[in-house]
Length: 283
Image (cartoon, rainbow, N blue to C red; front, side, top):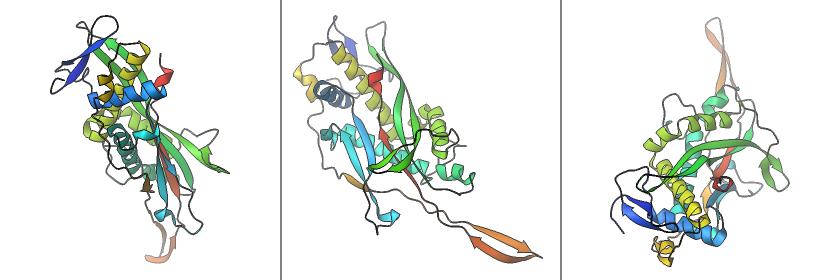
């Protein structure tokens, strides 16, 4: 296997070979590709990750609630692809809730956008990474070049007997929908500034190539499915629920003195989601 950036070159009509490259557009992470090929061959699908709420105890405060990592297939837990999907999704939630400065000047967190509503209601919603466009190009020198456009989608959720479920309609001015639109608009720039988002894009590229190789009936030896060198590590499947407290007051002044300082009630907003590329809808 060549050192440094690697790409795939068509070799005949039904096989490919690994070659060195200096072009990032055609470069692939071979470890991600190997795991994606395993998922595609065994499960017939793409990797998926979701961060779901655990059913809390009645006396459990929101700050102490937990979330469960859900991988499909389950054996992705403890792999490099599984960890990248979790880290990217978790960081997206942190940015959404204003835990860190926004990666692009002018972007506002969900809290900033919700402030425009007056903090007058509670809501729950989910947001997830998606692939909006996926194509496979072949260069003049027979290099496979995956081309994709990624983004973030959001949907409001409602409480149901079996947990949370998507609302039939989500208004376009919902804070999380507006944040997802801003993130999508700046996705490529954010990927250059946030390494975990860049790595998630590499996972998506590997998944697209894996789908192409399997569905094109490429002649693949078993070595293609072991390029990850069986790198698995311990993985805790429960993580703390992200939360932020925002407090504010209405102050009334009369004749130059403060008359009352009315403290508003606390509001609860929760964000869930994951990584669901949706590559299988592309042909």
